[in-house]
Structures are given as structure tokens and as C-alpha cells.
Length: 324
Ligand SMILES: [Zn+2]
Ligand SMILES: [Zn+2]
Ligand SMILES: [Zn+2]
Image (cartoon, rainbow, N blue to C red):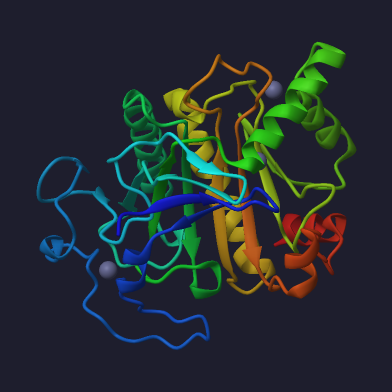
């Protein structure tokens, strides 16, 4: 069965039904125990992954390698048009699912890589987003990273993923709506104004670099949640100029190092929210990167309500991260 997008009648939430995902090898299990496997991401084992979409640089001696996900959640085939009735809507799971092998070194976290390697990796993220945008059938490209079993990583070797979707996911749509409403009211960008205010206030500020600031959000969903915002207003991450990319590598790496010192190397996810591929340039959107550490688990209340319970005030988290 090819992957399918389904939308239920009651909550109107989408789910991807992807049975092939069940076949993927699991090296690190959620309870922490690891099963030793031959790492398919280490140099010399390239034949264990599907052929590379791109290598940087091309051929042997690669520093970053991009491969299609062997167990994809979505595929570039079929018809993305939804059809159904009041009891459920479905469409072919048209999209792309790529794995970016961050480094030839068998490292576990981004912080194990030098800043220059992180810079190259970020430029590869931008490259992939620009390429997927050209396909024309896709509405959104999401770059994310899972580190540690508790954050959903099934393989240890540091890697990132890109999933391109045929429609804009609900969280991003909500951010677009909120940003647009603020822009209509004030003629300015919500995130630009937020950044100014948080930098002046300082209580939730973790670090500043030349082009970026990292803060703990006012309504942080979990301990040590971080929001990385570019100082210069831009809707699209994938159009980041080179000097800003190098600065971003430093800021992201420092923020994650602080997190690992403050919280004893927790599992974490990060994700990039950039503007959608399709539709008019949403000038009010301000791209950003969110870091979601996993020191607590989502339980019944969170699943039932969408409201998270965070035991660490973001002001305290920021103070700990600043000092770490
Ligand atoms: Zn490896
Ligand atoms: Zn802005
Ligand atoms: Zn966001």
C-alpha cells in the first residue's frame, strides 16, 4: 500500500497512513536499549541506503549526503487531490521524504560536529527546500531533526530529514494566520516586534549573535524549549545569505551546547518553520527554528487537550541556559 493522507470527520486532523514505515530497522529503542547494527550512514556502507539524491561534494569523500528515505512516509507519486465524504477524506500521500546524513563521522548530536560542518549542513537544508519547491506539486517543506530515542530517532548516526507535503500543515497555517492578523493591525511583523521586546526585556533571552537571537518562548510548552529568530526579517529560510548561514551555524550549535550542559544531553527535536512553497509570498511570516527538548513526556492530559504542562518557567530555563 502506498502512503495515504487521511482526514477524520470529528477533529479534521490529518494522519499519514504509511505501512512501509513499520519495516524500518530500530537501533535505539524508546526505553533506551540499543541493538547494535551496521550503521547504514557511515562511509563505506553507501550501498545500504537508496542511491544518493545529492552528495556534498559529489562522490567518495562526501561531507553531507542526501538519500531518499528507504521507509518513506510520503512519495512523489499519485494524485494529491483530496476526495471523500463527511466521514473521512483521503488523498494519495504525494510528497517527499529525504534523509540528510549530517556528517561522515558517526556522531550522535549536532554539537559533536564542528561549526563549519554545521554551516555546510544548513546550506544543504536550504538547497533541498529550493529543489523540492521547484517540483510544483508540493505545498510545504519541513526540515527537522530527531536526536535520541525519546525524540523519535531510530538510528544514532546524526541525521536530519526533509518531508515535503501536498498541503500546509495546521501548525504552520496557524502561525501564518496569526502573523498576518498582527501585520494588518500594526503594519509590522509580529516576530520582528517580539524579538525587539524580548531582547530589551532580557529575562527569556538565551544568547545573541550578529544575525540571530535565541530565547525561551513566553508560553514554552516544555522545559528548555528554545526559539531561534533571525534579526533580519525574511519569510524563507532557504534564501538565507551565506554570511548569515555561517552565523546561524554558530548560534544553533551554541544554543544546543547550552541545552546539553543544562539538561544533561537530553533527546531533542528541532524544526524549521519557513514560508509555504505555494501561494503568494506571505510577507508577514518570519522564518524561525524551534528546539524541542524531551525532558518530559506527553501524557493523557496533553493528548486530550493540546495543552502541555511545563514544570520549568521559561525565565528560569533561560537563566540556566545563559549560565551553562
Ligand atoms: Zn554511522
Ligand atoms: Zn519579521
Ligand atoms: Zn513555528
